[in-house]
Amino acid sequence: MASLTLQDVGVQYGDVAAVRGMSLDVEEGEFVTLLGPSGCGKTTILRAIAGLEPCTGGQIRIGGELVAGPGVHVPPEKRGVNMVFQTYAVWPHMSVFGNVAFGLKIRRRPRSEIRAKVKDALELVGLAAFSDRYATQLSGGQQQRVALARAIVTEPRLLLFDEPLSNLDAGLREQMRVELRELHSRIGKTAIYVTHDQSEAMVMSDRVVLMNGGDIEQVGTPRELYEGPRTRFAAEFLGIPNLWPARVVAGDGTGAPAVAELGSDGVAGCRVAIDRVKGVEPGTRGIVAVRAERVEVCRDRPGGSGVNVWDGTVEVAAYLGGRVESRIRSSDDLVLRAETKPSLELVAGDPVFVVIPPDAFVWIPTPPS
Image (cartoon, rainbow, N blue to C red; front, side, top):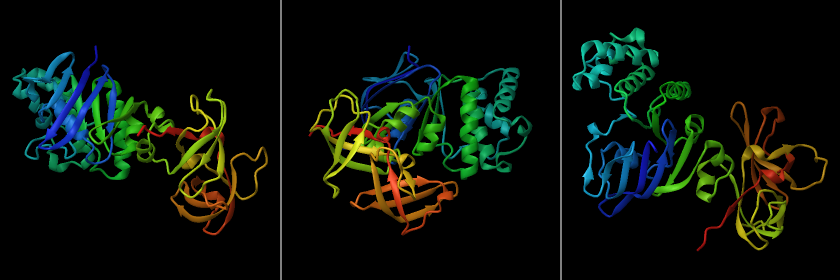
């Protein structure tokens, strides 16, 4: 049985559909991230799961129990879910112990049980030594750990996270990603996590649900989404900078290498050899996408077959510490974006050669009109 089931769920604000017929099954113990830009509906659906927003259509089941549907709205406190917010929401007038114990106290649990469970939760998040401190005496990262301990101490069926790391500085955010993933592995609870940060989603998730316009754009493991976006939106949001309209001009549709002509955006006539185009017949139009790190840049003409090789000029080279992001214009006016090592020492105006291996291309079909 799925831990969480969304069936054709809709959430409407007046004339605005914030969530449009969303369906999803989340298995017991999974860590699933809802990823997408601001306004795509990811926080709205999280709040609907928690019971903080009413559904205007469809059904939500938690552990098989119907908690939202036609004529049904189980209140948040009876759904067996806990939520960790972006703003931590720890109470400054309470100690760390008091914050974490709050949910157990309102459930009227015995004092001995409260002490034992709070102790265990604080040990899990690394705050056992801070039990008597007040929230105002803690750093941002420590306050977030308090919020995590408070969420897990009541042993909910489902943990919900609404961009909980977005207020932390970059270094602490990276550290907390790892800690949160490790915590999830130890407690084994089903978790739904909301973020707009694709790096966060890739590091932490068993599966990623990419959302766009109130519905699901694509679902898959981090690797599946990273290596195989199925739409232009997915490719762009997941950080693929090289996207060209194209038409297959040679190939048998079996997945063997094919030839595509890059089309309508000013590079007509430029042909490339591409792999991974199974089921695509000659004449089919779509988009070819290539990640910047798959674009190989060298100063001397490479040997070999000469397939997918261009000569060009560096227009921009931006140093970013461990890598250089470059924009290169080929002699036939194809603009390519590449990531290179700083040791290549590229600067604007340098003549270079560019190679794209055939297996670096991702074929994205054009949606039917």
